[in-house]
Image 1: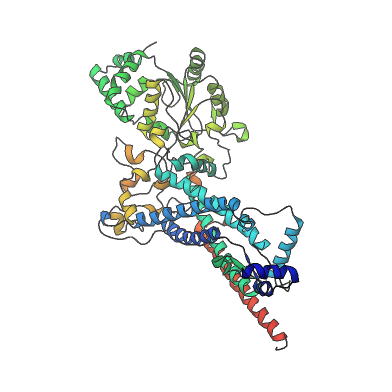
Image 2 (image 1 turned 135 degrees about the vertical axis):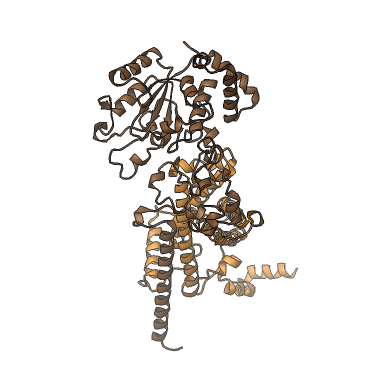
Length: 243
Length: 357
């Protein structure tokens, strides 16, 4: 009853103190929906496990003594690698689905507007900002143009390479005729022979490693020096602006 | 035309030995005892298929391996099973007589003979790096391949190129499937292939009158569908995390896994860990040396046999994926640290420029 009368009053007079209050406080935009945030942190965890176990598969820990039957160290390491690889791959699939189902920010990882001049101008501004040539960057709601570029060309494409080479190698263990061999086995002759697939898979890990360093640094730096929130946005989903 | 059985009887092989041979063949092909009569029947009724065995740029290790086959039967029986009409290493005829046989078989059995190729043709210098009977080998290969039923690429030379195709491959030694594209090609890689694998492939083709089921890369599935690693008797040490850290250490004496000293078992498809060599006596890993991956494409150009990771030549002489990647991560880390320092300094400078509020 009260709400109806105050709303009609606002319609009549044009004044609405509660709306003004609300407007003052609204400085944030909902950007990253829950599935995106959940994927981000699961993915981050999977990448950490994958990098550590993957490195240990290529360069195993010092040997243990005793009966072979009393240890299963490489077995456990490889299990952790394969389990987190499934999390990584299924997560990536889910994330691709969410690019269609989610808001338009969810699509930024998978496309780069290379044919739009304005995109390249903003990218130039971001580069100048990182080279200390521009005094301040723009206010970005979703990914900034540089982040989008790196997300697509460094993270997404490398992730695809890792999934394809990874499951191709996994299919070798599952044996010829297994689902992984049938779906991804063609990658082996494409790259030469299994040893070449290992080499590409190793290189991919280091690309992801470089990406992680840059990604974490850029997130922290933008959070401090940029004009909007970054890290808390990936926790709450809300982007807040400082000015 | 003589059947296999007639040839074998003529050579003094008893029926009892013949039937033993049939059961051994069935076993080595992974077939049940019920296939023994089928094999015997095929041998008794089918005419011998002529096989022309050409030698290109190679070292004859495939032939050396082949003549040591123990199961199916010893060399003489196998050489009688197939009608090996031309093989310049093994045949008695030489010179023009030998070359005449080639022409005779090609016209008489047009479209019905099997071409076995050991080695490969070099294409540079107009093929002059390998001359057979006064002509480049590539000419002979193309001529004989034109009317054959199928081609067997013996060994890594014919299948992939092998050491004569190693960088920079001055003679442009080229595997058979890149020269002949209109015939079914069975790749039997290895340097050399296992004797029993070679005779097994031939026996299968004669018995069933068709080429064996091949994998994605044209290798018979029955011998090349699993890695050395999958059937290695040292595999439990791999799973346990027990490795030879360096040759002649305590772990080497205990027979631990050779993964860390560069064994290519995990990336090599072959039957060594099941069939083994020299009548099943041993194979490299059993002798304490890692697999060098001799049946895989380009094994000669993948860096040291004793390194786990392949050298990446684009990044310098002694680099591998982990060294390159580690350097890249280090460089990015250093760049980020430097950038962070400059950012902080600049921000501090801007703060001090501004009048205090």
